[in-house]
Every structure is written in structure tokens, then in C-alpha cells.
Image: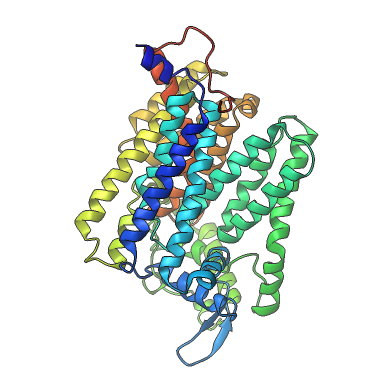
Length: 471
């Protein structure tokens, strides 16, 4: 009884973070050693690998065509291949260098997630959350993948941890740090710009103008970090592009007559007539964007009707790591292994979301009855319709009203989930896109675990863990 009570009442300790770091490092190193030489680039990773090689050799973000022509490019965001290029320059132009980069950023994400956990939960649940972040099957087995979702999840967790930690600090340094890292994240994943103002606002405990100034400052600095790349695109491409030149393509894929909520090849959808003779990368993307907007305006019912399918593809089934590994080397990672990994991912993600819903539904705050009812519905549909549970999670966050500023971890999670829903409701869905939300939901799950365990091992004194620092 006393051990259980201590698990749910003791403050987090410094040794706990060391445990999380050790587990995160050792597990990722083991994955890299296992994957070494086995998994060549696959899917979008093939493109990232080629571009990173060219950047590391001083050739810039350019593309060599079969006829020998070299053109400037920006179809995919530059951030990840640029980071890969640094690793390639240091350790050699091979996929394993990028795997090591992914491992390092993954460890940072696990540390940041644990630090968020210890602000909302006592020692036991906080440590459990940190270990889950270190060993989460979706992110752990994505370490060998030359893809952006794993490092995006880690960087969002890092930004959230920095924002929560900056709430007691004054001056320009919190804005500068959050703005710079947000800009880096936008260069990796442009839709992350939707989260930047929320993280900036979270970093200020003072309401009103101080909070607004930080939100605007972080967002403006993030855009400023991207500005040199935008100017490069305007100078080198046929049209300007903020970060990448694929938004129009994605809108067309998500709105075409044959759209089904997932990625569909242009060969199957058919290229719009007006875009067939448009060969410039940015110009073609803008042409596809106009065609996609025309699809939306001409058949809004069809477009809106696809939203559940898009969100279902994003949140109901991951399987992204197994798909990548199986595509890269089916002999080393056969289909049955991919299926087993996907089932493990689905189980872990649903249990995490269940406890996150518990934290929002049963935690202190306004409208307790409404929140409990919403959380109960979200839990009931979690197995067949996880996408709807994510939507209801946003409703739970909204129920807190102005009180949500007292729950910055919940607000960061809600902003990330909301940005993901908004983005892929417009474009199209895939299991890997939901991975960016995994880490910021874990601290909420840790808080839910604390509430659940506290019912069985109540602490006679005040609840610790919320806002506490390690001893």
C-alpha cells in the first residue's frame, strides 16, 4: 500500500530523467545497429536522400534529370534534407548517417516529453510517460526511416517543453529560442506554423498583451527564419514559394473526383488540362492548387464528405514504420512483422489517448459533467473510430475556456492535434501524419494515469507533481 502511494505521490527525481535518457539512447542505438546496411531509402526518403547528398556536396537543393539537365527544386520542404546533409558531410553520404541523426533527435524528444510529464504528474506516472516516449513503437521503429514525422514529433515536444519552462521567464530570450526552433520546424514541416502562435502564447503566464506579444513574436521570428529560403525560391524557381512547392498538388489530390481521403497518384486522378503544359515546379504547383480550389468550390459536398475518410486514414491506423521497413527491405522486415508492429502501435496509441481523455474529462476545471460525458463518448468510440476521439479531445480542451491557460500541456497537445486535423481534413490522410501528435499526448496520458492511480492509492496530503521540479 505504501509503495503504491509513494508511486502516486512522490515528486519526480533527477535520477528518473537519467533513466529515460539511458533507455532512449540504448534502444535507438540498438535499432540503428540492427538497421545498419539493411534498409536503403524508400518512399519519400529516396528523394530526401538524393537531395541531402547534393546539398552535402555543395550542389544545393537541385535535381539532376535523366537527360543531364539540372534544375533548382523545392517540391518537398528543405529542412530535413538540409539536416541530413550536415550528417552526411560529417559521417558520410549514407542512410545510416541520417539514422543516427534521427536517433539523436528522438532522444531529445523523449527528454522533452518526460519534462512535460513531470510538470503534470507525480513521480510514477511521469516516469512511465518518459519511458513510453523512449520506447514508443511508432517512433522507435521509425528511427531507420528517412522521413520527417518522427523528428517533427520530437521537435514539437521540445518546443512545448521550452514554452512551458519559459512561463516564469521575462525578456527576449524565450521568444528568440522558441521562434528560431519554430522556424526550423516550419522548414521541415510548413504546417507547423499553425502551432507556433499557440506555443508562443503558452510561454507567457501573464494574460493580455504580454501573451499576445509572445505569440506574435514567436510567429514572426519563425517566418523570418524561413524568409531567406523563400527569397531563394522566388529567385531560383519560376514562381515564389514560401517553403515548398507541393501544397497545390496535395489540395488537388484531396479534392479530385476520384479522391478517397488518402494519397492517390496523378496517373489515376488525371492531370488537369490547364496544367499539362505547365513545366515549372512552382508554376505547376500553383496550377494544381487552382484546380483543387475549383474542385472544392464546384463540389463542396464531395469535399466535406471526404473529411472523415481523411481523418480515419490519419488517426485510425498507423503502420508507417512497418510499411517503410517492409518497402525498403521486405526480406529483413516481412509483411507479418509489419502487421505485428502496426498492431502494437495501435494498442499503445489508443491506451495513451484513453488516459489523455481521462485527464481532460476528470481533471479539475469548468463544466465537469459535460467533460465527463464527452470523455466517455470519446472512450467508447476509441477502438473503431480513433479519429473521432481526437476530434472530441479538441472539444474537451475547448470546454476549459479561459482556464486552459492554466493547463499549458493540454493546450499544446490540443494545438498539435488541431493543426493536424485542420491540415489533413483539407489535403489527405495517412497513418504517418498522425505520428506528430504522439509525444505531446503522452504527458496528458501521464496525468490521466495519476488521476486513475490516485483513486486506489490516495495521498493524505496535497497532490504533488503538478508544476513540480525534480528533487
